[in-house]
Length: 142
Image 1 (cartoon, rainbow, N blue to C red):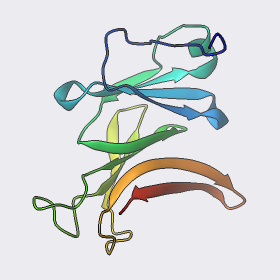
Image 2 (cartoon, rainbow, N blue to C red; image 1 turned 45 degrees about the vertical axis):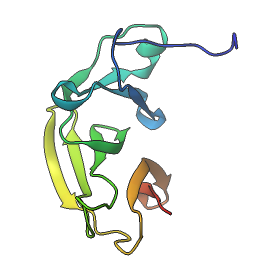
Image 3 (cartoon, rainbow, N blue to C red; image 1 turned 30 degrees about the vertical axis):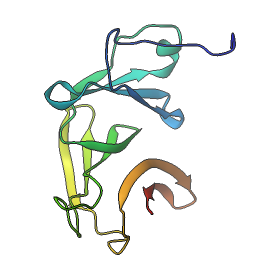
Image 4 (cartoon, rainbow, N blue to C red; image 1 turned 180 degrees about the vertical axis):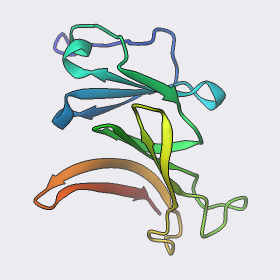
């Protein structure tokens, strides 16, 4: 469709996933896999003008299942679905990074819905509520 515009901030990259933070006028891009994976945070207005100069960039640690950008924070879920090598309670962790430093500022074991037969985080986002921002996430299950 001519209405679809393609952006390629890091040509040749693989494993690219975006996260829009409309409230703060930013877009985050996670690219690569394994030891080469990284997060990049851009000013959204500049990005739309194809200025792909990141405001911040830092290594993406751990096996990422889902992530989102909100303000100066990247919220990341790491882990994998239950299986012979990963029985309940699993290996799902919440990690929070400060994008201005690239440092992990919080890490907690994910104890939500441990009783699901198949438990794999598939999406996370931050939504605005009257009481402030709220992290929202969903699982793939069977």
